[in-house]
Image (tube, rainbow, N blue to C red):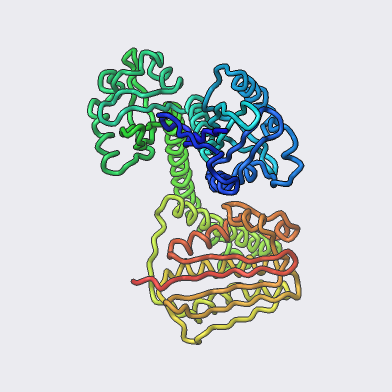
Length: 515
């Protein structure tokens, strides 16, 4: 009996297979040789195997005494490949032509499949012809191959499906390797007419030197991100694009991947937004200037009203007779003072919006600042039945800032605290030095408090929190916006913490502003 052991790896050249006479080798030695082979070896006639080496048994997950060795070897093969392999087996057993090397799948021991590269040939076995097959596990190679195929398929799909313009061209020559349909449509040509042409020949860039600039930038940086340029269509018209580019290596050659999109609509929207913004800014400036002019115009007659109402109320030129005249004069004076305060607030707001608010820093004694503000609101607090406490640390605290604006900040915060604190509540004013210089002012009350949404509303010009307390007090909704603007003008920070039913704490941090 002679068994040809032609079991070289697939792909090697066949230059005459060495023939070994099995009768010349002891059975144990022959088994040891075949079991040491790195490929699986099986001898069969299409039914149960006549011989299986150790590597083949490991591939199919059986042992020498396993009942599986009594079943036809075709059961080892994946059902989708079984008919093809059986056809080759029958042809070889009948001495007909059959592929010497082919691939198929085995059923893996733990489920799944193993890809096998098989080299098969007819041999003479003890009692007649048989087939000798040597099998290599090429599953890892197949997995890599499939991953590459999936990657290529995915790239092709993305390449064509993306709404952007995509093209591949050789970096040196500029010859197009591939373009997607969107690129072809954008420049008004077919893919067939573009492929094989050079980017220099088609002159698609509106700027003649753009192709050379892109090549230089890619050579220097390796990529380009969100660059803007203009592309020329086949009809000569051009349009703006924003593109990114990357250098790739394909078959050893440098290839430029360029992805771009038409930004004509984006630029039109941007221009429209700019026009709208400019119009809004112009309207805002006009409004601010109107408010400033009207405020100045209204101040003059209001000062006369306030002055004459004081003269009448004080009966400086003689008795009025009926006491109701004095009450009317006081009402006139009180209403005029309120209107003047509103006008002053509007004037300050218009200065802020027009960018004309000027900071005139002076040295401020914090104790004098707070006592002056408290003196103006103390009577109102007492009338409302509120306790008012002041704490200054250190007592001689001083810093540089605009004294008028600082006084206005403190007055607005105190007025709000009094307005929104029910009878029997308490208000505190705390001042402390900042480590880096400047002053920290905190006005806290035990009033009705605000939600986060109400705080946002209160910080908007003319915004008012919808509350019974608000409606029972006069106000324009400019107090907190002015505080925020005055603090910002100093380069400071303004914070409000509040909770419904638990009061509000307003914190102002003002830096020391050099004179």
